[in-house]
Length: 312
Image (cartoon, rainbow, N blue to C red; front, side, top):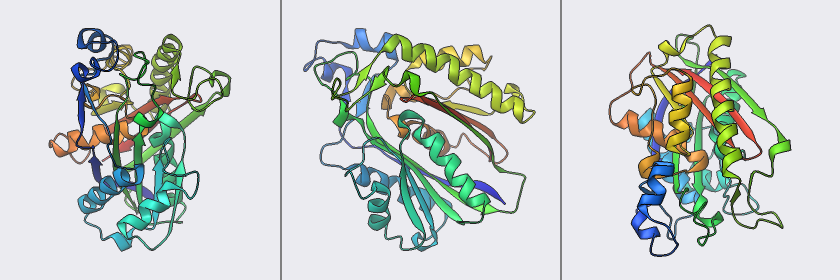
């Protein structure tokens, strides 16, 4: 049994905040933000919850897959910004979309969350524990930001992306492999909600160093493990954290600009939502086709990192 990617969707809150808008509330400017990050704007929630964002992305993925809601028997939500301590926000989304079968739960691996969630869904489908899964990344990162800290508040945005996976016997396509890692010795370089750092704290230099090296290394590892070469990758979709990180990794891996997908300019860092958001953007633009080889990779707080390899 193989997990085939059969649908996709995304949702961004209507409110757009540009770099110039941010310059009115914190000491910063587009001239400071854009060269360092590649970010021009971000979407921010007003009254929307994480479940609201995830609901809209999930419904679009279900429609894209040609399913009805009652065919969904697994929902996995990757988020660091749940609506409540409990129950899981995945169950709130399950209720919002009207799904009544199967089971739903959250996964928390911050910016690597979607990589982890996609890998987890794949294991359930391969084992025959579910037939159709919706995997969602949804975040309200704005809730975790100190809007007086120009080093972090300019980096993040809100949004959601989703993918529909279906178990099929066909082995010519589907999720080929996933590799996951974590190393808790670096938990202090990026965190929020601790006694010392109630809002998002980041040691930018250390995060940059680990992101570039570990995302490149795990990308090499997953291709080598599956006897594939970077020339065969159609779309490399890294976590959309920072344009400089994306460019460094692409250069390190010898990828062309056409292979490397970057949407950070308009979305900023949406944490677990960034990879499905980026995929939905290129898919809706007609830039993906059957047979394409996709490589996802991400690094997040924890630190956590990993890759998914998928054939459409």
